[in-house]
Image 1 (cartoon, rainbow, N blue to C red):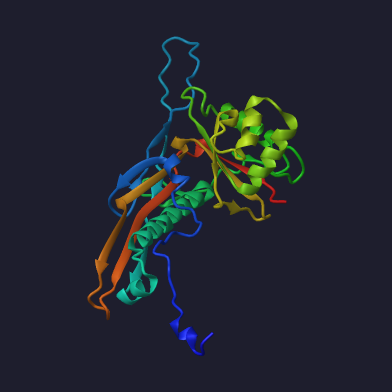
Image 2 (cartoon, helix red, strand yellow):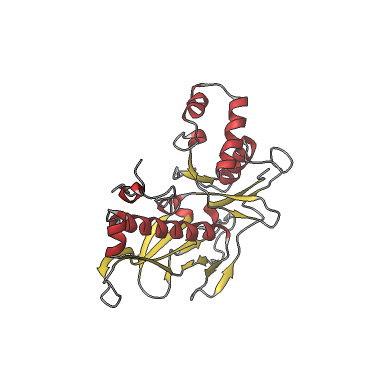
Length: 299
């Protein structure tokens, strides 16, 4: 081999670009009640509770009017943005123009922020009252399925799901209006549940779940299963698995929710292109009586 022949070596780069593995679309917030708003805060809905009717056993007695309970949950906007610069020198070195991929990545990043807002809204205190200044905590007394249901400090199991359905139906959720129940589970809880289903049942439906390798789309127990890596932990490190119906959670957008723009930066050397995106959104526990929590161990 001639001396110094390495100066003739060439380098070639692919012209294709693609995004690394990541969550691309919102998985939770599309399952919330949707709303658009303007201003610094918005009322997601106004709920009334007139209570029970009273028996009438006497004639000509005075009418006694009861107070009606009014609940007004408020939602507040969160704002985020993301910008990526792309110079002509970089394009020359990459032999590609990944601007569209940058925009897709920005959209995915904002979608993840929107899902984060939804996750945080499941069990955080919500603001209620006439002006949205009163904090109302999540009902841990009546709407939590304990971690010891179906086994001491256990993961997600069929007994927990059955206890959830009993609790929801006892609260008149999904009986008259046939609402779909959504449950968001982590990959760990999906594995725990599928392992248990495989042991206790071998019918066609369960075989189909095992063959597909996921709970998503299975319709098991008429539940819409949502797989996510976004979840919150309680003080003991247990996963707080959310279960809700569409009317239980609300998602609100401001100024179109999300917008993207590709523009040239004349204020920077080389006049690079900038891919930019921004989002304006908020989430709230809309109807507290349609949201539950299942505690599950990660062990």
